[in-house]
Image (cartoon, rainbow over all chains, first blue to last red; front, side, top):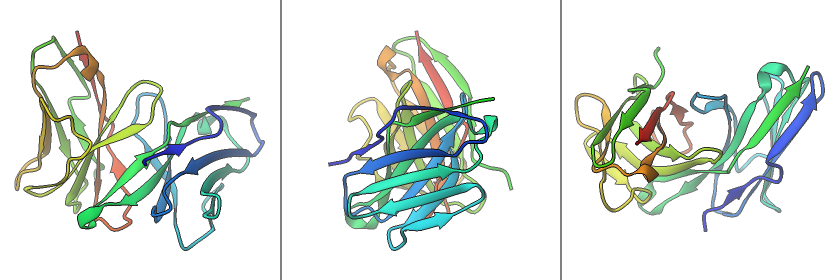
Length: 115
Length: 114
């Protein structure tokens, strides 16, 4: 079925620490994964993505790791800043019949960065 | 290059009225997706459209909800005879094509049904 879930609903870290947000997905047919950041009152903002033929991808201060064996995805944020405080969603791209695709979102993890 | 635009940003309706939500995709994007988000929850897929075609409406309620993406103009999500349970944030996203392309989201329309 469709299920993208997160291990921790909330995460509180100190400014400057590294943050790790985890996500489990259930559909082995998913071929593309995206992390979004959503600040209060705003739409989801793309952070980083990874295709299923990769196991790691790095961006600016962020790294996404994909473990297809256990269907696990994580987002690592280095040197977390107060501006990183938001809700983070993972999404899996699920191919559909007829060639279309759709994103299935997890419930989200709220990250709070303490100064 | 303007991002995805949605209007109105906030919409208040009384039960039984109609709600019309508009979405203009990013320039060059021909694929539009609508999602609904309840408080403290993730986004739930509703419908995927290309110009003049509904590709996947598996997430749309069977009644009262409809969507279109005409040849000219924005995509419209229409909710007829709204009920309090329709209160939510509705987000539109666009992508240049399907096949593992990132979807970029608009700011959303927050619908409140009194």
